[in-house]
Amino acid sequence: IRLATENEQYLSELSGQAGCFKEPQIVEFIFLLAEKWHLDQSARYQAVELLERFMIKQVEQICKSSRENVKSREQDSSWSSLKEQIYNTFVLRLVSCIQLASKLSLHYNIVNSDTALKFLQSLKYSYTKQELLESELAVLRTLHFQINVSTPLAYVELLLEVLGHNGCLLPAKPLHRMCMQLLDFSYLTRDTIYDTLLKIAIENSTPSKLQVAKFLTVKEDFMLLAVGIISTSVFILNPGHWKQVVEHLNCITGITSQSILEFSYAVLKHIVGSTTP
Image 1 (cartoon, rainbow, N blue to C red):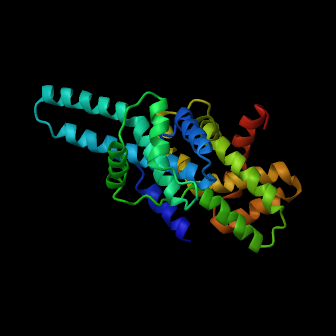
Image 2: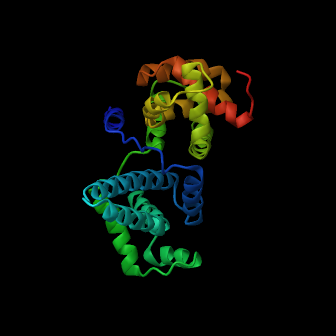
Image 3: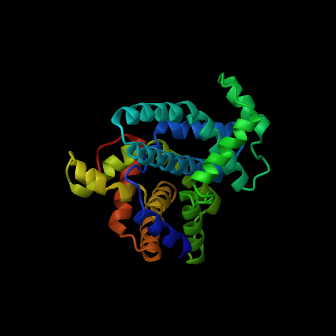
């Protein structure tokens, strides 16, 4: 119930820029760095979500401050310098988000300053420990210290637990492993999966700008993503149980069986590269 409420609240307050900082290159960078530093699954998703929320807040603050400049010449120079600042500090902020996520996951492999600085120096950045600390504080302050956000992984794991309690006799470890692989895949191919899903929903291959904008809440719906990932995983591993699991997921979340089916199709389509339903 807590996760469902949190998801609804997040969607009701959704920024129009949501998803802008979840591009495949950014997600892949975070995933590879988390792997290099031996972080657990939760930390990598937490880092993606932290960076996304921080960058959106930062851009919104910059837009607000630039609008408050009265003279247009002042505004132009201020805007360009702020854009440059975002560009120049992006990798630093990304590393800070991974550091914070590593601390939140309560993992023994917390990314300390020495590890982070060594990596940044390998990319020819010359930050100091003080600048690294200030970067972490900048992220924390911008997000008002509200950084322990639930990730799609939390939704997946909770739903798997509920399915188990409801008597769905599925192989727990292989199913969890498949869900993790598909969740990674959905993050890395996010735009193509949701583009397919949108076209299915509107029954049209050329959506309008308004339809794309309205679809944003679907792209950011963690509960839908979680049920779609579980449904697809079951279809791959235990197709005989798939219908039963979809019905259970529908009862648990209220998401229609049709929506779950369509999400699974969109994911499978891009796994196998087929266009046949």
